[in-house]
Length: 130
Image (cartoon, rainbow, N blue to C red):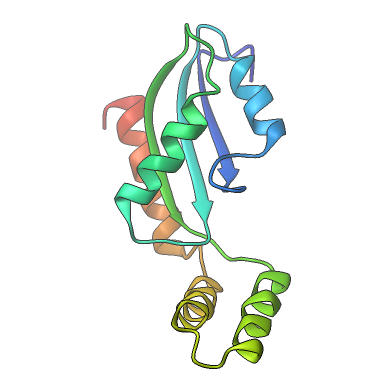
């Protein structure tokens, strides 16, 4: 990646940002054009995606150009579902826990082919101007 002019960097959302290893890679991409793409457990909210991208781009080297980004919903592990189910066991009327569990179910099939096609199209447009 460090030998390329343009680098596409993918990540999964980890506590509202990227993993430490992705952050380290981003900080090493001096003088590069970078396109970011990622998944997060909660989807369909561009303002939430923007917050994640803002946190991730804070890891970019100062001389790096962010040429674009794309985000979509991604699946979450079974431990997350178990945590939400445990919340509901303790409080069956917990509306937040119900919402979280419903979102886990909605996310389990993501990223979809459509999600991936949309990210690929965004990358092509940002990198190649097409």
